Amino acid sequence: MGEERVALVTGASRGIGRAAGLALARAGSPVAFGYRSDPVNAEEAAAKVAAEGGRAMAVPIDVADEASVAAAFDRVEAGLGPVRVLVNNAGFSRDGLAVKYPTGAWDDTMDVNLRGAFLCSRRALAGMLRARWGRIVSVASVAALRGNAGQIAYSASKSGLLGLTRSLAREVGGRGITANAVCPGYVETAMTEATRQDNVRRYLDVTPAGRAGTPEEIAAVIAFLASPEASYVNGAVVPVDGGMTA
Amino acid sequence: MDKAELQEKVCSILAEQLAIPVEKVTPEARFSEDLDADSLDLVEAVLALEEEFGVSIPEEEMEGVKTVGQAVDLVATKLGADA
Image 1 (cartoon, each protein chain N blue to C red):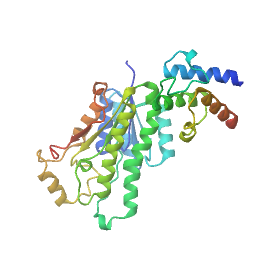
Image 2 (cartoon, rainbow over the protein chains, first blue to last red):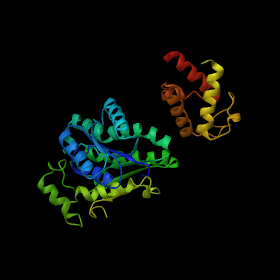
Image 3 (cartoon, rainbow over the protein chains, first blue to last red):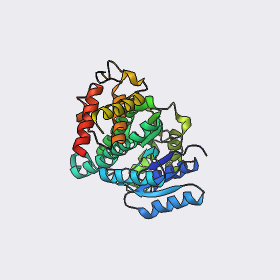
Image 4 (tube, chains in turn brown, cyan):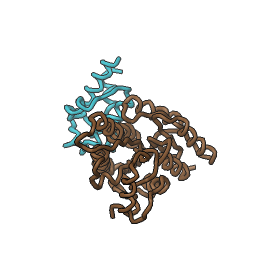
């Protein structure tokens, strides 16, 4: 068996995170399914990996909380080994027009989507630098590439995630570590469940594929960016959006 | 551990981390000018020192460290303070 590249996926109890964890496991990584509020589904995903012959665990992690991030990494390192692949997937979204947008929702969005990715990346980097190998894949959004009425906080946070990704790529790209981002288009998940039907129609109207994406279609790109084969892809922003931003 | 032992240990870690011969790592040696270390090299060296000595060196305390001797002093202070 070659060196195992342990992966930690945040927000992995469902949706894109869960699919990414399963894809990474099938590519040979031991996987920690990070969850904040849904241990049952995270455990179920880990059990599914185990049933397929892989190694996996579920781990509680509130990415916005420094102590929780530290504790989660410690648990993963003890349970599976040092984290070599980090997928910053945990995300928060609350739509609303700017003029009436609540300050608390703005803070919650930034805390999870941006501060969370920073805290997890910082914690992961120490070990990756020692190993001279690492993969950080952040799940942004097409809202990072285009403005979106009603998504001021979400769009700003995801654009920020691209800045984080690109700066990381330059900082550690000389050490065998890459940082990349995927920008999913409209994907049907629990997070997008609250999207109003007229908005869904509007998204699909501008998507050449003419349909929503699946979590598995995003996960396949994440798994590639996390793979050894993607060693020359660094600081890339990859839309996975059925052509929406083409 | 006395200061001489500490210095020897710090120098050997720095030499390994920066991939340079240990003879070049003298107390007077300046990281950027003499040892060709960039800021990431320095951060990595600090991570290695933290791990070896079980100390925590915040970023603001790294800023004044320009020479190997200053790095030794910082670790010595940390060990004193943490003891």
